[in-house]
Image (tube, rainbow, N blue to C red; front, side):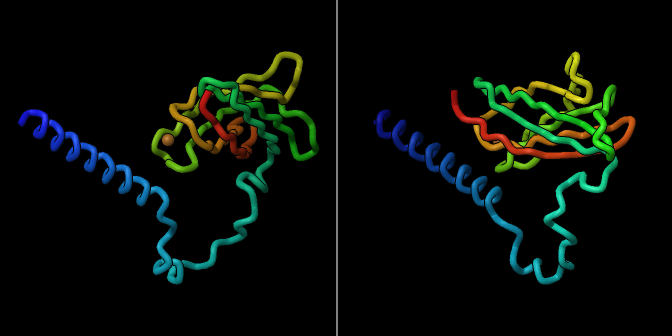
Length: 154
Ligand SMILES: [Cu+2]
């Protein structure tokens, strides 16, 4: 009797968890509804990367170091390709499949000694998955760039 009751509770809990996971998966993966697509004006220049046109050019690289640690390096330069030294630079990490669910940042990036215009930071992400890494230069001039990094197990 107790076994049967436990089994039933276990099954019910399992089904509830499965439903919750299915619901989350549905909410997360559901693309923009086709119905509303026709009502919105065409998006302007979707191919233009974020930060294009801003005064600071940024080249971002991100690597998974293991144990959910991601090292981000960014090279900031002016319009005339001079390294942008002593800038205020931050980074953000957001999981691509779960936008804004556990976004990290702003994390300050520090300039690498002896390498003007090179900035680095380390982020500890909470789970395995693909992450969008955003680097923003705030001062003395604005700039923004993104890259993606796959964070695997191990
Ligand atoms: Cu996540």
